[in-house]
Every structure is written in C-alpha cells, then in structure tokens.
Length: 216
Image (cartoon, rainbow, N blue to C red; front, side):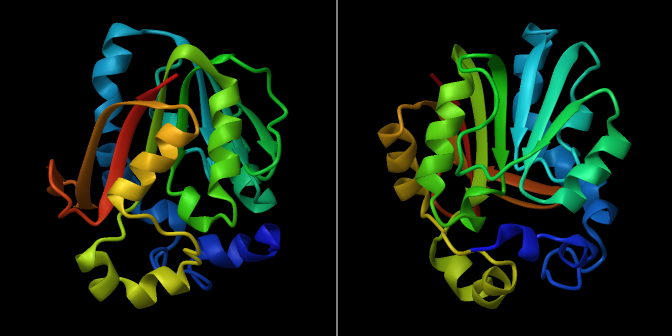
C-alpha cells in the first residue's frame, strides 16, 4: 500500500477523509486536549524526558508536552511532517513508515505515543514491535485506536472505510496484540471523544475508541 499517496495534503485538508472535513488542524483543540488527559498525571511526576510520537501528523500531541521534554515525531506523510516542523521547530521529525525499523536508538524514549495509527496499517504488529524496541524499560506507551464493537460497526462502518481504516481491532483483540508484542498493560479503557464537553471513559466495552497505557 502506498501510504504517502493516501496521506497527502488532500487527506489532511479533508478532501480524502471523513473525520477531517474541516481540515485536520481545525478540530485539534478539544479533541487533542481530551486525548492528552491520561498523560497529565505521569507528566506531573516526571517533569522531563524524551517523547516520541509515532504517526505524529502535525505534532498536535507533542505540542502539549512541556518544553522540558525532548520531542521527536515520525510519520509516513511528507506533507504532515512539513506542517509539524512549522509548528514545532525545536522538535526532531523523520519521514518513515512505522512498519519499517525506526531510525532511532533502542531503549531511548521515556514516552512513546501511538494515537490513531494502528488502524491505518497493513501490518500493525510490526509497528508495535518497532515501538517496543525504542521504548525504555519502565517507559510509558500510550495507544489509542478505534474499538470495533457493535456500535462502531453499526454507526461508523462507512466512515471507517472512507478514513482508510484497514485494520480495526476490538478492545480485547488489541489487548491481546499488545501483550503478544511484549507490552504490559497498566491501564485500559474505552471512550467516546467528541468535544471538550463530551469525553467519556468506560471500564466496559461500550466506547467506540480504545485507550491503553502500557509499559515495557
């Protein structure tokens, strides 16, 4: 699959996307504020470190980390990396397919993010194994992906197809894959993230997204 051909300017501008009809950056504030919440307690106790965002797009998650963190991002999209560099000139960005070996030292990152990426990949297990390699022992990996439950199948079937979601996992199946690739799950939940005022987490399978905090 030619990821660079799919995830170009037309995709991020919304012409070749369902969820980004208004443009990728235009909905960023509320959505990414919500997505960042599970990391706040960790950052409160760890004021600095090295953070890597795998599938970083415009760097909107990295942007939310304090300046005391060294920030790194990788993405297959040349256009997205160009935008990320404009937004975060102090960060280091690399254009690379997450399924390929990451051009970064092993055991070097305190935090690795993998948000809304696995569902876009032909071989998500390869990406998880690459992430596991670069994460420090005891480091935190924060993963989000659509939860292929009953509600997701019924409500978002066409949206997921339009969004190029070629590998969707149920919450339980993603849990198993994370364990298979070596991660220890610290916390897991499902959730719905629509706006700042509508972010709901569930202990059950009801949420249409899955969230995981893992360690190595």
